[in-house]
Image (cartoon, rainbow, N blue to C red):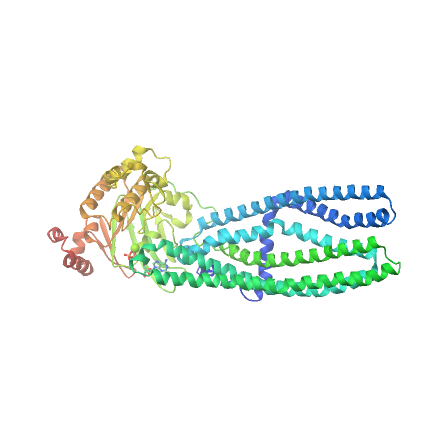
Length: 612
Ligand code: ATP
Ligand code: MG
């Protein structure tokens, strides 16, 4: 059953604002970090490497202290040489393990990004149609690319750096205490304001990062819509308006970036100021202690070096926390997609639909689009026998497309059931169901690729002969042969090099090639001239005689539907009349009204009057 709740939350990150979101976003970051589980060895390796680098870093001032106190002051050249060799060894260790840490962390982070993208893509591939009714493609693209990248940056070295920083911080404090307790306490006093400053910074920056990601999503949304609608924009001369619309979101994005930049710029000079005050304290108090003979010069210099090591992990933790906010903003957006409910789901233990004869039955079907208030189909019941051609006729918006979309389970009926050969479509696997249904959607989508690839989309292994046969039945073979490279001609993303009617015929050929038991043509010949349409109809009849297809034809032209075995006239989501052309002419005022209006309008169906 379809869940009534909407997935509109996914349009942008609106639902992530507010204080309650902070704990929630931390949880989602942990969820994202759980992806590191697949890269345990790399993450552990990076952490260990960084710990070794930290240890080597902490050792450096000790060598310098020994060189000064025991080498220079004591005039021992041998000690100087040894300490220099020691420093060289430390430098080499640092270099090697820094490289190792960088490499391993990067490899783990790329793995996490790969898994996230993969998970997102495969989830998106299974999301219900109702999700796409509401989502903005640009927002979705941003989540798959930029948001994943934000998470990757954090996931990569976050854990290693956090561990190393904590070790570094406490290691440094320990070493400082071992050198001189008074001096250490004085220095720690100057650290307190740094911690407070960083704390404020991190709290403030989180919502700023969320805003940046939202603005970026909006920008991509506008961009994607403009690119898709470029012809409409030109046709209506709306370039200036679109320029301005894009300019607005672009400015918004820049503004939000600047806000974050300002937050960084406002805080960090103060951090360094306090760090420098620490140095002054060391030289002042430490200098007096050296004069008093309580501290050696080497110890003072070592102490001063450790001071820098104290600030560095604090800064790293600050940046990590900011990065965490940033990753959190992105993580929430990514998991919103990953958690979007699958409204059309296979029931546990769904069985494969065995090859069907093509009997289609609607039993008291009501339907309402998820998240809307109004029923689009009301109590629709009918039965189509195998091999019949049934036509759906009705005004625009009467529910024709909606009705046929329930057969391959693009949506689930809100009430009642749709049955194929006595199987409720909700009890069988989606794959086995959809494999037996060929549907040419009202909005034809061709992919960038050759004509042949496009026709063979549902059966990539089809031979050229099979592709040609399908194209012939769809009355497409002749025009395809006239294309510069025939079946190997590359057509654009929207098939822009083809006319509307040509595109429709390619789409029909595509549906015919999978040899479906049930064929659904939703306004599929609306852009094709009546003569070609008649030829397609004749070809379909020949196919049907051989294979017993059940065919659904949706059309607004009476001329397209009058040959059907049965015509269902839809009026505002209800079946208002049903029968053959002849019986409807006799019995249905609505059918006569539709027919009459079309004869008046175009006169191109004058022969219909004779038929009646
Ligand atoms: P046409 O002849 O123009 O193709 P139709 O008979 O195929 O029209 P449907 O597309 O089935 O009409 O639409 C039936 C009703 O459902 C319309 O009122 C439409 O506004 C509404 N509708 C269609 N698609 C959606 C959707 N994805 N979400 C919400 N409402 C929808
Ligand atoms: Mg329609």
